[in-house]
Length: 314
Ligand SMILES: [Zn+2]
Ligand SMILES: [Zn+2]
Image (cartoon, rainbow, N blue to C red):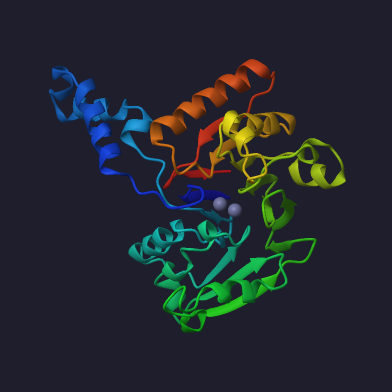
């Protein structure tokens, strides 16, 4: 399966500010030397050697991840502001996908706010969209918040065919792929999802404050976390912040590394980035996470920063 990140920011969308952009440009200008400007090739080489925190941005959109299965079925996790660009991108590519499967981890604003902007898909009568959640009142939860005075239109104005599926405890299948879920610790509750296909296991675990029970090996946790090929994990905080913000529902990057090491996770993507953090700080956290993993454990997962537009084969 392939995954693509469309929104990776926690809590609220945060566009790049003028100051941040100017600091990136300034950093480039300060690093360039006369020989880097000699030819188009040297200029390209110079750009390719710039660190990610200067040449890219992790992005400011809130949670949305696309998973494409081997048979091209498209699964979307959460409809944060990132889903707007996913919809626009499909339209630009002229990709006529008829059926979309959108799973919700929970219904905090940063995970649903992009839904009315998933266009043109939600306003296209040739599309059908199925919403999934383990919660019985999925339909009411979604429609309640999308109406005046909170938003000018209601979900009745979606012209796509809309279905609601309350997930059974055993999860569901898409062809040869299996999708299961597990409740995690977060204010108001949240679900992590696992997609298993061709022996590979992808776990999406946003908005979770890991607790002792997540490390204890029993049937429930072993069934879910054993043989994880890739884990996208809420690592919004530093350790200091996680102590200050105990019970706010998010995990520190260091505890995320502990967790990934405990479960022998192959690849860990740091996710649900703190809105206050600039690119430089997020990549500093990645460096610290790598140091921590390499120095404290015999086993260390491959570590990466989730950023908008990043595509990976799981
Ligand atoms: Zn969130
Ligand atoms: Zn939340």
